[in-house]
Every structure is written in structure tokens, then in C-alpha cells.
Amino acid sequence: MTLTGQKPTLKSDKYVFIKTYGCQMNVYDSDRMFELLQPLSYKKTNNPDHADLIILNTCHIREKATEKVFSELGRLKKLKLSALKKNRKVLIGVAGCVAQAEGEEILERARYVDLVFGPQTYHRLPEMVNKALKMDLSLVAGSQIIETEFATEQKFDELSTDSISPTNSFLTIQEGCDKFCSFCVVPYTRGAEISRPAGQVLEEAGKLVKSGLKEITLLGQNVNAYHGVSSDGKEWTLGRLIRELAELDGLERIRYTTSHPKDMDDDLISAHGEVPKLMPYLHLPVQSGSNTILKNMNRKHNITFYRSIIDKLRKAREDIAFSSDFIVGYPGETDADFAETLRLVSDIEFAQAYSFKYSARPGTPASGKVEVGEQIKSDRLESLQQLLNAQQLAFNLKKVGTVQNVLVEKHGRKQGQLVGKTPYMQAAHFCGNEKLIGSIQKVRILDGFSKGVSGDIVNNDKVYDIQKPAKIESKEIYS
Ligand code: SAH
Ligand code: SF4
Ligand code: F3S
Image (cartoon, rainbow, N blue to C red; front, side):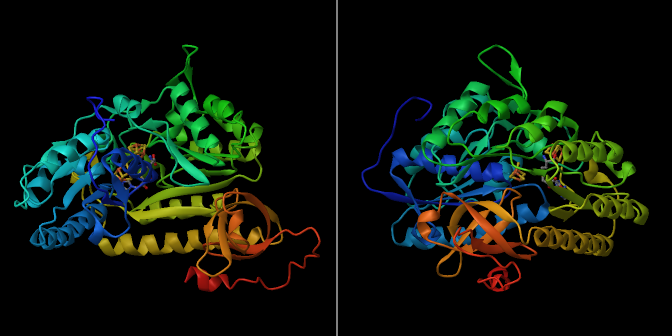
């Protein structure tokens, strides 16, 4: 539906290609864009050459992410020009966080871009597309459209919520961030923190479960700061929301991401011990192991606090696995600060983690500071990643010999092979019938690798020898 309530339709089918960069929130947003475009007869294509509308849903988090967008736009210009020669109009749109932060610059630098719209305005996409379609076909640079104001709450009222995947779905419950870490663009691109009303979330989750999917991942830039109003007039915390969602018949797994350590309240921590549907895996970014750096980053938590949260969570749920984000080479980071990061990682033992070199972002408080040398950043990143990779492999190997419930997601690369996720977010490869996609299967883990595990579906008639080699040469799968 458009803002005016009309459902515009076109005579023949058209194709839309959306390329998604960045975080899960962008993945969720891209799915919503596909749905919004259906009434305009746009079908999804994975080939930009066949598309009548191409949207880049962009990420601004690091400089590289933004650069990628401009180089992709260069390629799209050629595509648009060659289509025009055949009298075919291709619309190009830039959505997401780069659009929000650098909308005017995009229109200036790339005159052939027709639409620029931020994360809070994409519910008006049908209107924008209709307007752009009326523009003069002969022009490469039409009258460009830009929509980048903040209107988040209204956005969610206008979105439809069909799940694209048959097994699991993201569900945005919170958006924006008020934390203002000194390195981060998110508070500027996604705006102030807002929580969706609890009733709206429960309704959307109910619909998703009815459509047959078994896992929901609650999304937010700061998801555990959730404080949505409910029909009882009270504000629900994330812990409360999870407990209510767990009552939904048919929903088997609940996850949430991304959390801030400061917002891990006691109720949420105890939910990990009390709600079996809440999966034993938590992404809890720490960024650095040095108190000095954390203070300079304006992270609002120190290392003692972070460790205490991890301890409480392990007490609540013994087998909980952790993942985290790290930034190396933040301005002023010394060798001693970095050594503290390595020490923290060694102590905690992460099941998975993401690590990045600090990248100065325009407009953020850290951006003017004297930077750590590029070589130092590279060296630190390498040694941190070596340690994290070793921990990831060790975690995966630890599960060898156990039987895990695997939510089967899709075909693997090899014939007859399926891939799914264990409760700990490990990719699990095994052989099985494709009819199993969408179900939860017991899989005996026979081998572990850096990026996942492999095994066999548990067959009650079979005697297992966990020493026998895995049927699947998983090393090839991951290469
Ligand atoms: N809301 C989450 C993270 C959002 S951004 C949190 O509170 O942690 C995802 C990750 O990108 C961050 O955790 C951080 O590790 C990384 N990141 C953000 N800004 C960055 C920058 N300027 N340079 C390098 N990495 C950055
Ligand atoms: Fe960015 Fe910090 Fe907000 Fe996370 S908590 S989105 S890192 S400002
Ligand atoms: Fe990137 Fe925006 Fe997500 S900057 S990480 S797409 S919130």
C-alpha cells in the first residue's frame, strides 16, 4: 500500500534486483522491499541484467562498505546506458545507510541514480517508483527522487510481513541507537532508538509461525534495549517479550541480535536458563579488552562488567556459546591495550567472532583523532583473528560425538547434501532427503571444521561409531 492507500499496478511483469550489504537489519528491509513492490508487478530476479529496477541496499559502517557502493554504481551506469539504447528503462535506487548519510552526494556523483531513500522511508517505495516511471525515458539522469527523513514508527505500520525463507525469519523489533559509541555511524543513519509495540511484534511472529517457519531472530541495532508498549499499558523488556513469544505453538527457536552488554538485564539473563526455545548462543559485542579504549570509545561498560555478564549467563545456561565484535587499532590503542584484548579473548573462549580494523567515519566523534598506523592495525587484526579462528575450530570440534538438533535450511553444495544450523549457530552439513528442509533433525556430529560441523542424521536402527570418517568431505565444502 502507498501512503495514499492506493495499490498501483502495471500491465506486465517487471523484474527487481536488490543487492543487500551490511547487517541483518538490511536483509530484513530488503525482504520488505520485495513485498512492497509485488503490487506493482515486480518479480524478484537474481540477475541485474534482467532487472527493470535495481536497488542497492547499502551499509555505511566502514569506509570499505561505502566504497563498494560507488564502484557498484559505476557498473550499473553501463547497464542502464546499454538498456536505454534498446529503449528499455532501468531504474536505479540506492537505499540503506549510505543513502541516509550521503544521499545528496550520491545524486551529485551519480547523476544516473533515480531514487535515493533512507532506512526510514522505504515504505514509500511504491510511490517513489511510480513517480520515477513517469519520467522521460530518454534521460539518463531523470528528475532524481530523495527521501531521507526519519519516520520509523509509521514505517512499520505500512509494511507487510510475509517470510521469504521457509525455515527462519528475522523480525525487527527495535531500530536505531542512542548509545553514540564514538566510532559508529548507526545513531546517525538509523536515528534515535525506537521499539515496536509488543502487540505488533506478537502479531507478526504469529503470522510467521502460521506460515510454517520454526525460528525467529528478533532484530535491533540495540535489541536488548527493547521497551515496547503492550496492550496492558506497560513497557515490555526483551526478556518479557521472549517469554511471551515462547508460548507460540509451532515456534521452536528464538534468537536475538545485536545486544549491548549494558542492556543485559537480570530478567533477560535468567530467560536463557528458563526458556528452552531461547537458543544457547549470544552475540555480545565487546569491541576491546582495554578499559582505557572502552572509555574512549564511549562504550559505557568496562571489562569487569562484561566478564560479569558472561559469568551470569554461563550460570543461567551452562552450554551457552558466545560471539562478539572487535575493533583493532582504535585511535590511541597501544600494544598493551591490544594485549588486554587478546587476554580477554583467551579467557572467554568465543564460539565465533567478527573483527575489524578501525575505520574513521565522517561525522563521528573519533573521526578527527590521530590514527594508529595501517601496518600496526593489520598485524593486530591478524593475531586476533588467528586466536579467534583457533577458538572457533576448538568449539566446533568439541561438539564431535554429540547429537545436535539441526534446523534444516537448504541444499548443500554437493548432491544429496543438506545444511542447517545447530542451536549454537554452527553450520551443520549432512546427507538427507530434501523433504527434510524446514524440519528439525537429530544429527550426530562426526567432524568439526573452522566454519562448521558435519555428521549423519540419527537413525535409531544404526549403531554409531563416532570414530568413523564423516561421509562428507567437509573440507571441500568450505574451501
Ligand atoms: N549495535 C552493535 C553493533 C553495530 S555495528 C553493538 O552495539 O555493538 C557492527 C560492528 O561493526 C560493531 O560491533 C563494530 O565492531 C563494527 N564497527 C562499527 N563501526 C566501526 C568503525 N568505525 N570501524 C570499524 N568497525 C566498526
Ligand atoms: Fe553503534 Fe554503539 Fe549503537 Fe552499537 S551501541 S549501534 S556500536 S553506537
Ligand atoms: Fe551497516 Fe546500517 Fe547495518 S551502517 S551495519 S547497514 S545499520
